[in-house]
Image 1: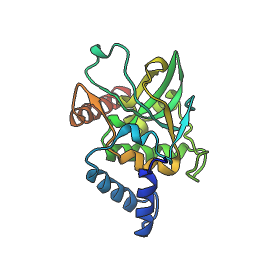
Image 2: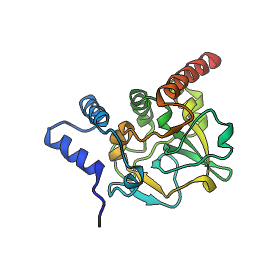
Image 3: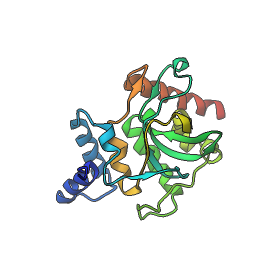
Image 4: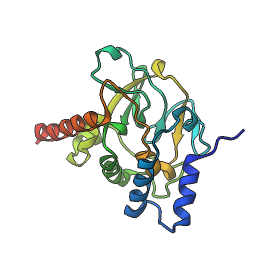
Length: 204
């Protein structure tokens, strides 16, 4: 039996309201809807028909998956369900920006900057971001990336990886799917803000 699509339902609902996609109005609407979603079954979400299972993540694209970090007992906190923009390959895994480490509005602000280095503005399965660590760290405008940059190990993935097409980015940004262990999300977001502000002062 096909899994009902949360993404498609939200897209249909906003279309019926006549709200244009990827506008301030649509983002405000998605954020308000996200607040009404008290809980999301993340395993069901990974089967959402708007998403695509992938065996290998590719740079510049967005993914969701379950993760159990190596040496997690030494971490102050971590996210068990990352929302990741893949940056590039790394030893035994990949580097990615886990957007959950930013509050929803800051995620959206960072994405607005990153879309300027997208391969196209069609927002389809071929749209990707031309990003790497050198590009992100060289410009203060991308400062919010700093607390999000993580090294994910393939052996510590605890589910399939699903690809989130660019057409669904705005929804994914606001869905309350973060699952932090060791601290609540407000604490994480506060410390992330302190991290990227301090980092900018260091590179000035």
